[in-house]
Length: 141
Ligand code: HEM
Image 1 (cartoon, helix red, strand yellow):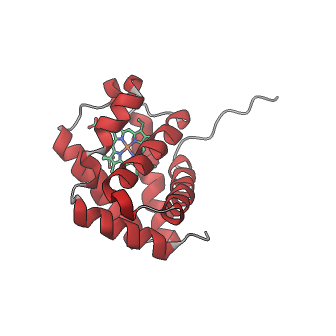
Image 2: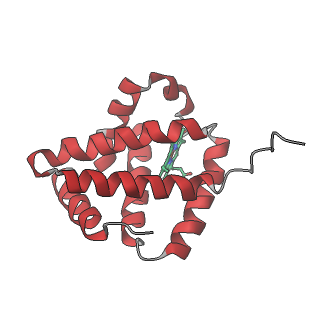
Image 3: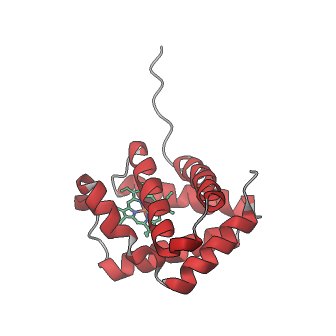
């Protein structure tokens, strides 16, 4: 996984400095752009949910050089998301809103390099999360 680890850490640090609960802006953006996902949420309170997503992002950033950890934690996260009725098509929606959130919080300090680094990282995160989903039944015989 050739991720731009420096850009990811640098941008995450600067975002957390400006907005310690990174995810507090994320949900309003997600629900505004994709209102159809709103009914899936509700097991946890808004602030709890924000804290869990922020903590998970921080842990992923901490473990960027630890593919074993990433693979097992994200596959487990994926298995839980099956129960939350989250489908594969929703992952790009969340990625778009996550990058929009980070860019908004970072403001002038955001750059194309950060944007590219996060898009690539989110792609890798999505792949490892979806690996926790049950295999799709094959369409052939
Ligand atoms: C790969 C990117 C994602 C990450 C890192 C992530 C992270 C998390 C975390 C840490 C939780 C807390 C509960 C748990 O750990 O099981 C959670 C819950 C949840 N996530 Fe995600 N998630 C991702 C993608 C998505 C997508 C694409 C959706 C679709 C809209 C989604 C919808 C939900 C829902 C509905 C819950 C349960 C919330 C509740 O009812 O309180 N997640 N997610």
